[in-house]
Length: 355
Image 1 (cartoon, one colour):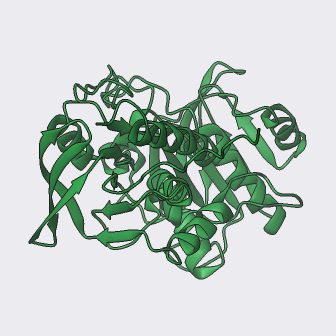
Image 2 (cartoon, one colour):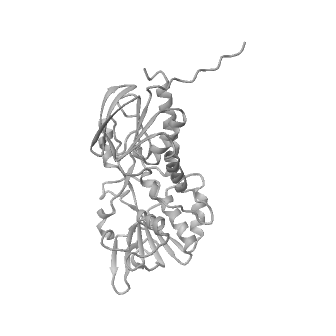
Image 3 (cartoon, helix red, strand yellow):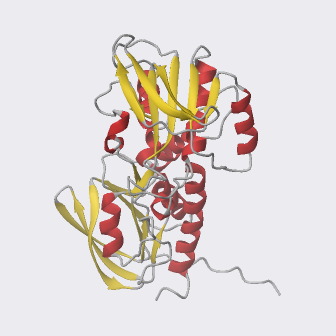
């Protein structure tokens, strides 16, 4: 007897709303659309991709697995689908229950309504505001930048230069853990991904600009993936990258040389030192997006001690969370979690959890 083929699930009226158009939201939307689910993706900003869309490729002599190219491809892919994309849009209200939610959206002042079976919160993160670390001079010392500023410079201008005079730097200091593991800043957690992120950026700079020397100031170095140990070893082998286990206390402008004077404790010598640099780059931590807190509260989701959304904490069925809004993640881990979340959402909307 021939076995009857299984009927495909009926996906009518089983739409999914994804809140947040960063790489996690985009990936979840693509995965669900590929499974035949009708998806509406809403993003508060004017473009998709979130923070990750501002990153540049960090390849050196080899690919350093920063996944910036994947972000660019995913954005191109989603713009060539029939996924409903609403930018300048926020979730404003929700009614109903499991499998039959009625949501209200604020689309640049225009009210829209949708009926959906499930919601995915992928609201993302914000970089820590470096202005709050006044001792580093961000915002008034022109040659103190965040790593994101440096990424934008490379992505948009294709070169590194000092904002004060347009001259190429010869000596750069990177500061780790700015706004993370910092009780005074109110963030005692580790953002986890900053070490690998900064070192990939440094490795790319050293490959592209071999005359630049770099001082990497750090507290300790967090591992990031199975290949990170080998990558870190290669960075340490580069004699033009100095690893200094000390977080600087102050940055001053040195008028005589138009350089930046960095004060730090030399752990090896047990004394306070000052050293001059052409630029200082701040590797800042992650915080939950402000609008994500409103969304999570609206959907009955809880927060952990570090202020991030607890995955699975929602009081209503059919509501999911994914990406860095559930805790600091790099692009690779955000992609992995988004795919897993999409699979769980699909099982929910076709399964017994949905009436």
